[in-house]
Length: 133
Image (cartoon, rainbow, N blue to C red; front, side):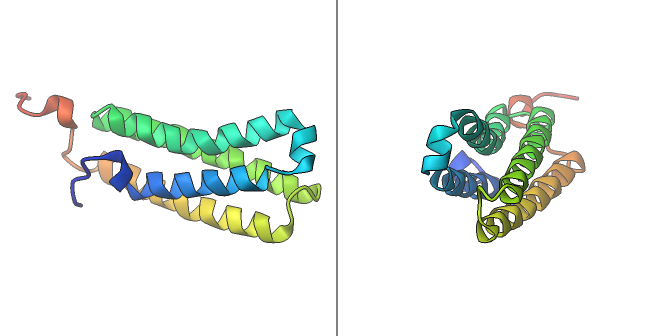
């Protein structure tokens, strides 16, 4: 696996950012203007996926990155649930539900694969470079 030196090159962060943008666009409606709590909750979940990936990447430690990926995956599952519920109540149309849940499913697989890779690699992280043991 190639070494990624900056956040913007991390594909899972790019995908999470794209999902967040779609969620922001889909929640910019009259319904969500009148239901600010739901709007904030969905937008926060969407943003937290990318933010947790970024935070973990920035920690420069394999274990902290893996932990942040698991947190991001939890936020992803929460967002998936919110989107499905919005579809159940007719707030999102079925095309939007299908688009978002498909992208979230793909991102979840990518996050899990990266977590697995990091868990099984000898990589410790930048903060451990040059240390013995």
